[in-house]
Length: 188
Length: 76
View 1 (cartoon, each protein chain N blue to C red):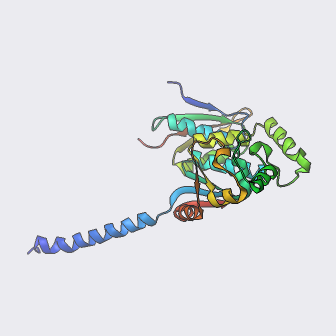
View 2 (cartoon, rainbow over the protein chains, first blue to last red):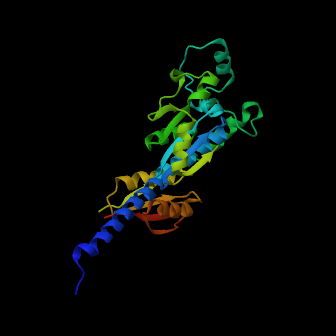
View 3 (tube, rainbow over the protein chains, first blue to last red):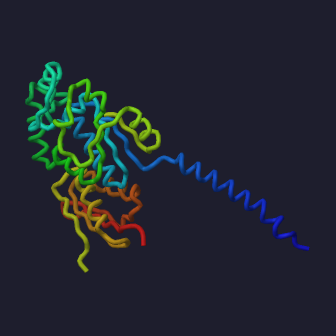
């Protein structure tokens, strides 16, 4: 004689409900297909490396977020823009590069000859410039965060940052949260 | 029908892959995109890109002075 339908299905329904709950937890903990990168360095070579990886990851269907902090922030400055600053902030502003076109090389800088030669060679070899890579990154939806704390330390203002379609400010907790739930994290 | 073609010859990493991804975005599922590139890293890069994006690498190989890859967009 077959068992009562109610008695047989009830435990199964409970099991299913528990499995659905567990599946929900697994999905919530699953790492998202995202690259979170700290761009700490303000040298031309490292900025190019960051942007090459960022654009490639975005072109590979990953969500990409770049967290610019300390010297890296120089790359986000727009030489054509001005901001109201205190004396110390002005001094920082004078000493630090104004945008990607003024970035030094981390090696073989040679009093400014290095970056000029590097750009010349890169043009000859058809390597995209950091400016072109930034434009591509913007078009591919790469998100840029400027570290609020470092902006304050360097005396950089919102008004002097480049026009970039996905640019905002954030703090360390945002990076940690995004890095913890993403698949790939880099520090350059 | 004229196949979608990306001529990235003369361009270096990461532009051939960036341009391929742009073209794939425009394509319909099942449609093929042909990429020409002379970046020496391109054959291994296009293979890795297809693995990552789940698109199908139909063929990749050397031609006269460049590489030619055919990628089929995933999905139905």
